[in-house]
Length: 193
Image 1 (cartoon, helix red, strand yellow):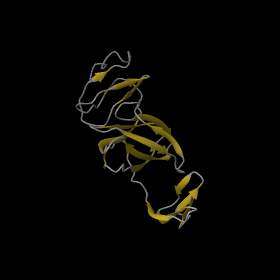
Image 2 (cartoon, rainbow, N blue to C red; image 1 turned 60 degrees about the horizontal axis):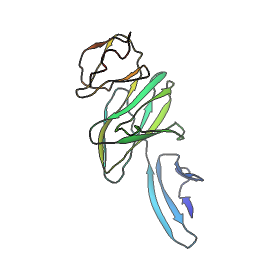
Image 3 (cartoon, rainbow, N blue to C red; image 1 turned 180 degrees about the vertical axis):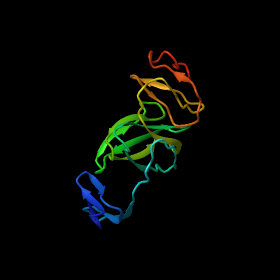
Image 4 (tube, rainbow, N blue to C red; image 1 turned 45 degrees about the vertical axis):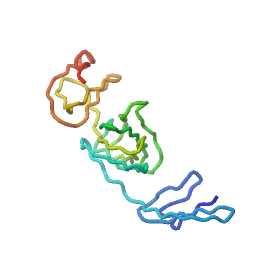
């Protein structure tokens, strides 16, 4: 089987697949030795940018639709990428600015992903969101990892705090004031869910 592109500047055929190089439209043709030929037109677009501390509503249809987003780090630090919602089991693949696959993040048999990624100011990553099952609706957000200290936390109604290796994850949402002391991490708030 041989693959060719009508415009290698937009879609380049490589040994391990087809790589999108620039915005535009190109046609990929597949040809077999027996003479079977088929084509597909592919349009490469710039994925919408997700801003820090903004919740994005994601809806994926029954045809294994995917959504892509870009994120640019506004400052040096560790960023937390997470999803939440009912009746959805999403996962994400992360790519660097050159389009190289960095890692895939799932939930280890749970229903939503939550992962950390170290970035420098101006670094760009691309996130490809997908899901298990027929269709999915969920929320997706990016937050900068905070340093634990005495502070008010913002916790959405019906959500919970997750403590893991002295790190806390708090989704963006409705303000419910209460104070947690991190002097004895995990002693307080461990039963708030």
